[in-house]
Length: 141
Ligand SMILES: Nc1nc2c([nH]c(=O)n2[C@@H]2O[C@H](COP(=O)(O)OP(=O)(O)OP(=O)(O)O)[C@@H](O)[C@H]2O)c(=O)[nH]1
Image 1 (cartoon, rainbow, N blue to C red):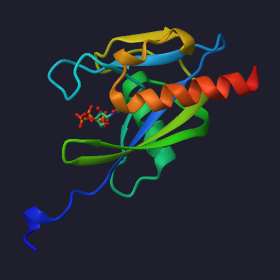
Image 2 (image 1 turned 90 degrees about the vertical axis):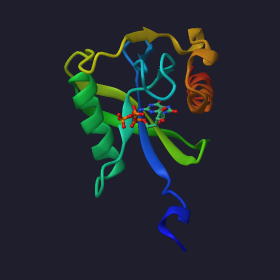
Image 3 (image 1 turned 120 degrees about the horizontal axis):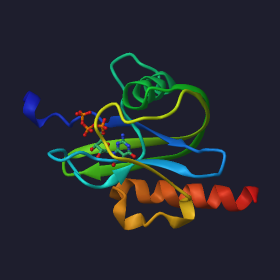
Image 4 (image 1 turned 60 degrees about the vertical axis):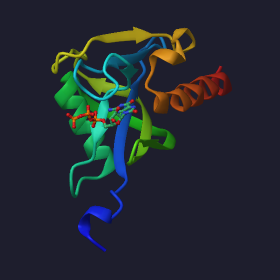
C-alpha cells in the first residue's frame, strides 16, 4: 500500500477540566487561524511521542496556563472525527494545582459554572464532555 493510503493514526488529545473552589470550570478560546477558531474548549493538547497521557496533560497545563497539576481523575473518553483525522479526546477533571492559571499562549480564558455553559460555543467534540461533567455533578450533589 502506498504511504499516502495508510490510515492516519488516531490523535490522542488530553483535555483538562480545571474545577475551582466554586465549582466553575475553565474554558479557553481557540485562536484565530486555527482549526475551529473562536470556539471554546478545555485546555490541553496532543500527546508527544513516548509521553503518557497524564504527563502530556501536566505539560500542556504548564505550557498554556503556567500551573502545576496536582490531582486529576478521568471523566470521559470521546472518540471523534474531524474530516480525515480521528481523535480520541481524553477528558480529566483537575481539582488541585499550584499557581494561578493565566493565558501564556494568548488564548482568552473564562471561568463558568458548568450549567451556564452554552454547549454550542464549545467545539463539537467537547459537547459530550460537558454533558458528562453535568451528570457527574448531579451524582455528587
Ligand atoms: N486541547 C483541546 N483540543 C480539543 C478540545 N476539543 C477538541 O475538539 N479539540 C481538538 O483537538 C485537536 C488537537 O488540539 P491541540 O490543542 O493539540 O492542537 P491545535 O489544533 O491547537 O494545534 P497545535 O498543533 O498548534 O497545537 C484540535 O483539532 C482541537 O480542535 C479540547 O477541549 N481541548
